[in-house]
Image 1 (cartoon, rainbow, N blue to C red):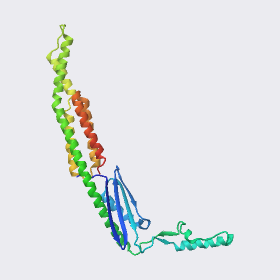
Image 2: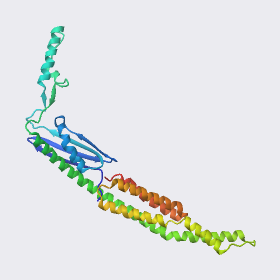
Image 3: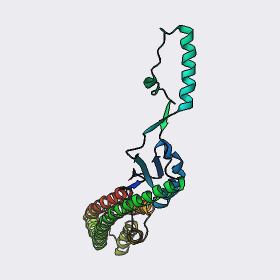
Image 4: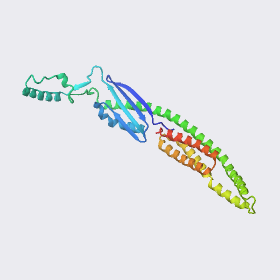
Length: 295
C-alpha cells in the first residue's frame, strides 16, 4: 500500500531527571532532504540518528528536532573557567595601563562574552546510555510518523481508485461511441457526394466511397490507445496496492496515461468523444497532482 510523504510524529521520555522530546515532520519533496536539529551538547548523536531516519523515509523533506530540559537540580550552563581566567588576566593588564578609573570589571557582564559559558554537560549519563535512549525515542517518533503516513496513504489510494473508475467509465463510453463516428462519417460523405454530383452525369462507385470511409476509419482508429490506457490503469492499480514507495512510478504512469488520452482526443474527430476525453484528462490531472504526495 502506498504511503503519503507528509506526516508528523513525536515521542517523550525522561532520563535521570532530564526530559527529552523528539519531533519529526515530513513534507513533500522530490528527493530525500533531512534536517537534524540537536542541542549543541548532543551534536555527536547525529551520526546515530541519521541512519534511523534514512531507513524509515526514502523521499521527502524530513525535519528532526531533539529538545531537552535538564533536571531541576542541574545547571543550564557551565562557566568556561580557563577562558574566564585568560580574559580576566588580559583585562587586568589593560586596567593597569589605563588606570583603575578607566576600566571596571563586571564578572556578571563577562558571562555574556562568547566563549565564557558553554552548555552544561550531561555528565551523569554515560554516552552509550544516552545514545540508546535517544535512539529509542527516535524509533517511537518514527513509528507514530509512519502510522500517520500510512493512514494518509490509504486515503490517497481511495482517491486514486475513484479517479481510475472515472477513467474506465469514460473509456467504455468512447468504445461504444467510436463505431458511430465512422457510420456518421459514411452517411455524411454519401450525402455530400450526392449533393455535389446531382444534376451531372458523373457518378461515384460504392467501392470508391467505401475506400474513402476506410481511410477515415484507419485515421481515427483509437483501439490501440484505448488498450494501452487500460493497461496503464491496471498497472497503476497494482502499484498502488503493492508498492509502498511508488511516488515516482505513479507519476510516470500518469504521464503515460495523459499521453494516450491526448492521442485519443486528437484522433477521434468527434465532439462527444472529445468531451469524454476532457473528463478523462481531468481525472488524470487529479492523479498527477495527488501522486506528488506519495513517497
